[in-house]
Image 1 (tube, helix red, strand yellow):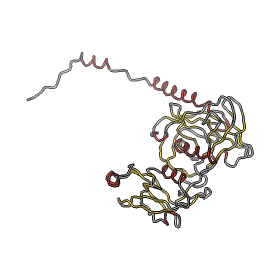
Image 2 (cartoon, rainbow, N blue to C red):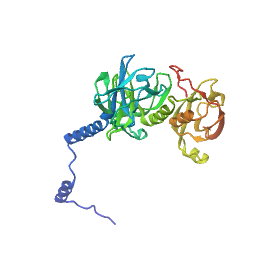
Image 3 (spheres, rainbow, N blue to C red):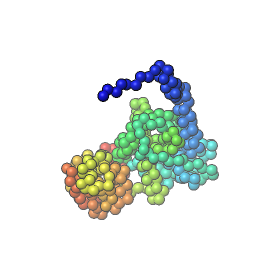
Image 4 (cartoon, rainbow, N blue to C red):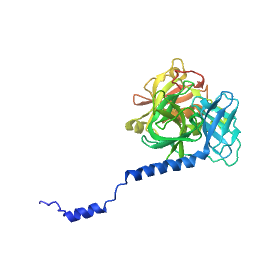
Length: 339
């Protein structure tokens, strides 16, 4: 049986087209973009700080985390400084001693006393996508609360800190940064802070980096509590990778990813325990490891100089090794890729 195609008259076609919504004009799209940036800036700017370091004569940026005066900035802005002041968006300037400093993640916490502080709203940096609109707010060259906008260029980048440690899962953006932006917030169009602006690649243009707020939240808690982070050290370089579904099912793993071992240091704990390049770490000390961040947290939380179970997937099979993490040396220097 042959079913003929329905015939649509010109009048019917015109009626259908008339019901289609008009696409927004270029002017309307630009207005919506401008409105999104403006709202985000208005929400976050009252929380952005200009940080002045006395003896070095340097400056940077930061932002208020809590109503009682804890603020976040970069380690390279305030690390080792004896006299730090913050200038608020309303012009007030007050002393802000360093509470804690972690050069390995280039993060630091200061605290100051002032009335009417407005803490930022924090977003989820793990949900960022390339192409997403982001806004950087800071004080480049001392110009208070300067705003630049761009997109997330990439996620999951690696960037070496000034101690030589490789920082993983760093955000790359083309929102322009300049000296003085360091420590300022990277913000979504919803006005939520998703990163801490930290570095630019010179002489390139439009290659800028921010530490994800998910990493910063963990570091901040430790710095407020202890003033520093005491980390276990394994002596390996790794990266987050997906695991085959059959491997996940066969071994009953709670996650479909792990940490691929891409390099090992001789005579260090991982090598001494029998870890091999190509192994995928999926557990440490009885806790699952799905990402580099998981491994970092467990090494910061776990025992040092104590025999600990390290679970790896090797050529599709599960193996449990015994490793003895030692305390990391923050000043390992440029060239170190290990954790």
